[in-house]
Amino acid sequence: MDFQLDNKVALVTGGSRGIGRAAALMLADQGMHVAICGRTEESLETTATDIRARGVQAWAFPADVSRVADVTELVGRAATAANRIDVLVNNAVTSTSAPFDELTDDEFRYHIDVKLMAYIRIARLVLPHMARQGSGRIVNIGGMTARIVAPLRMTNGVVNAGVANFTKQFAGYAARHNVTVNCIHPGYTATERVMQIFEREAKESDSDVETVIARRTGDIPLGKLVQPQDIASAALFFCSPLAGMITGQCIAVDGGSGEAVNY
Image 1: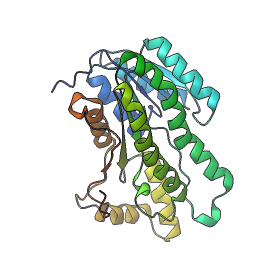
Image 2: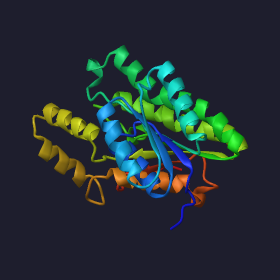
Image 3: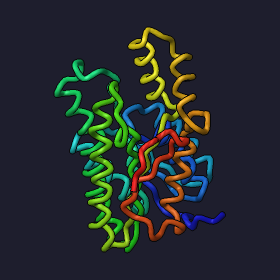
Image 4: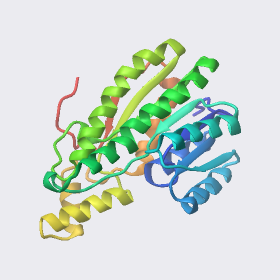
């Protein structure tokens, strides 16, 4: 299927690992040139090399998106290098797997800065580039803790609920420029970060990681963990003409594990 993305440019934050890497590679497979950012130069360069192997351009920018200066420099460098930005995938994330009584103000604040505020700041900086082109796609990667209670992931819940609300609010504003803004809530996805969550759950329940994984998988109607490529596929859909009239929406890619009815 032709998603009409040839020679367009995507900026993917947290693009060197996990979901971000999967999204960057899938967009590159569709002919997009891709700029990625992250905090580890080695993994950034590895992913950039894999993107270039698809026959497109790649730019790797080390950045700590919790810092305003890094965010400003990132968008400026990406726009200068590529001369346009058609797609933004906001994916940078952190996580502290701990019960409420172990979470400090600094941990809440850092999570908010790394994810919610970074998404807001980058979207604000990218929008003028998309407005000049008369079109654009923004995809925010949230999380199922926006919809469920997770005792060991309270900072995630606070931040992801904010991401969902920001998505809806910003979509109405960006629509005047023919820019769509949507959100994906991943369920338990086979990434390093989720494995760290499973390890903490195992510790809290005096169990082992294999038992936790089996229990969590048993809670998923489709019977398996979500893969990063599953999230990337949803992002690709939102970036394509197939989703041209979809904006301000949050969808779950969770194998059916979310039990709430969301209208």
